[in-house]
Length: 202
Ligand code: GAR
Image (cartoon, protein in one colour):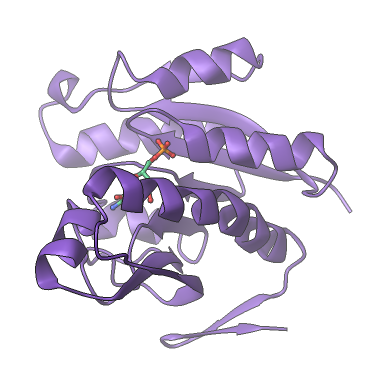
């Protein structure tokens, strides 16, 4: 079977991108990162990708008159690199229905809470402020809503009495790094079947 080509979109430090690359290097994931795109010129993820010899491109919203033209530029690069699966790894923008429809059923996102609890920005802070005893992370297919698409995998992480945003995010991140490569692997093995809101693992 040919390798699934991943296109990673990320806005920041890129630790999930690195975890995915490590899984590929360890032979656990039959995939190739075709390119990494960031919407932030100074994002660490671009440095990490370039260091690994992965094409790393910055596409900034401010360089386009409209959101659709910005997204079309991203889509053009993904298509140019023959991307099969778009992997959002800390990409801090909501993609429009236009983009989602271009890659329908082939965009994944990771979010640091147990959705539908605490969507959007500052998920760790939201969970601590709410007084929740459990949070975690969710990997889901992307639809046109914010963190609303069909859920692929989730794992819980306890919130401790003295947790800060930093300590909680560190423990959740360790789980993210294990879970995201697993979810991508299921996609590569064609074992994810979307039935409405339900993702069946076959
Ligand atoms: C991760 O914790 C990811 O779950 C979160 O951004 C971080 C990116 O870290 N994503 C979101 O909050 C999306 N709403 P990384 O750049 O080190 O992979």
